[in-house]
Length: 326
Image 1 (cartoon, rainbow, N blue to C red):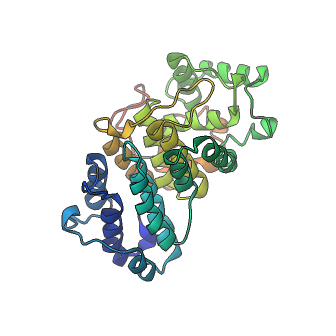
Image 2 (cartoon, rainbow, N blue to C red):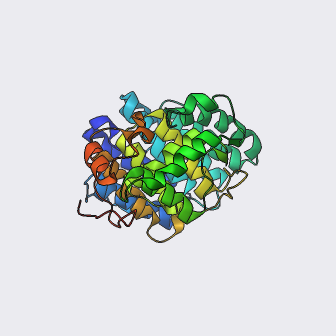
Image 3 (tube, helix red, strand yellow):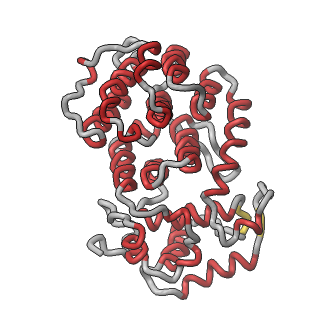
């Protein structure tokens, strides 16, 4: 979802034309697609002059000639995935429009293949392909201090030593990452990693990152967190996590044994705004906290960690024990 287009301001107008053309299946785009475009244009690109309905259409041939920057082309393909999944129900016409531009911009994409499979009733095969790609990204976003203990294990697993270590963090002071992490689990009645949780190293890092970023575990909060981390550092792992979130909460096809996927979360009031706002907060970070062991920092106050990584306080305090002004 990175939207900087590799610093190429000259490609903003062509990119806007691509989005305008790609989302219009005869209706000018869905209300959600149009709202996202407006936020993208005004809040991220800072271009108040980009009126969706006034933009001329553009052909894939013209796009191939204009986008001579591979990074910018890749990032525009990322954006097209997001706009594509926001059409409900998905249609072959929408897929064909986006596919034409994706090819002109350099090729296929894991997210595009997933959406195409869902539309063409090949969800099982598309999900299997996506899961294989996501497995690579998930390890990069897992707690490094314990990842090696669960290498190659996909099923839910018990690890009493890890569970005891995490539960013992309730002895830490309020406001520290470890104490608020365990309180977060108890309050939401989540299974604690080490007590029958699949991929415990991933969920350990992921849920601690909820607290550092200041975003709750609701469906809108989950999508916002993946957008925040993509803004924090535009890399393949963060992009795959963002697509996984869209599959789980927007397409409704990426569930698990203890999680029921949802559909159309971006249609909920305020969700798109929270996603864009969180992405922008992520771009203000001074370093990527997923590159370190958050478990090793569990005894540090969350406010201190936010300062260390350049995380701006969220609009709504989370966790509530943290003073938003710190």
